[in-house]
Image 1 (tube, rainbow, N blue to C red):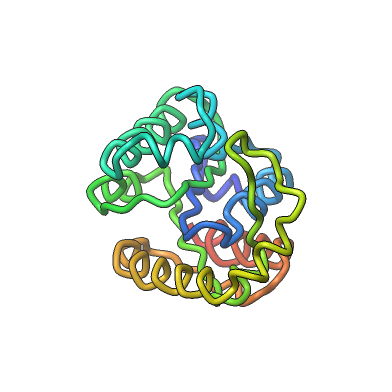
Image 2 (spheres, rainbow, N blue to C red; image 1 turned 60 degrees about the vertical axis):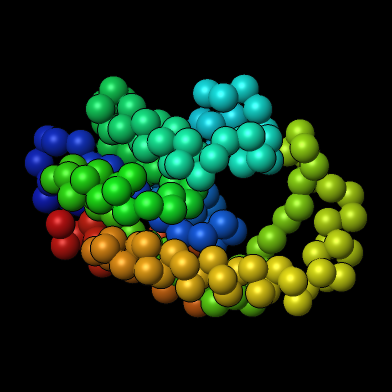
Length: 190
């Protein structure tokens, strides 16, 4: 039913948002529900650049990181046939994605949530992207710092992502509920 509305052309759902908002979790679930391909830009960066996300952030400038993300997204859109869901790690400049979200085959959605809900999803990894054993203890002992950082990220990206035509306020809901909203509000209306 959903696909018939789009005809035979591919549909690409692009999920934007700050770190730990739930792009990957909701994106995987959405792709599984629809039987579509799923790409996580962070996972593809690890493969493409041969380094962990931490090393990528520490080694590349913000402009270079945006360029890598943009080129990977364009590669998925143009070279991977079929319907896709793509979780896009933070892009700091509108010029990196504004032409992408304007494409006819793209449904761009900005996922948002409250700072405390994002904080609760935080996990910490080492330089090899392996979960740290004391992740929860570390998180709680640095709670004020991370909540401040999350608030700053939200404030910054709200300005950058305001051109994204669709916003999904997660408000602490499960990924299943977010996927239901995406299907109901954006796939059936396009």
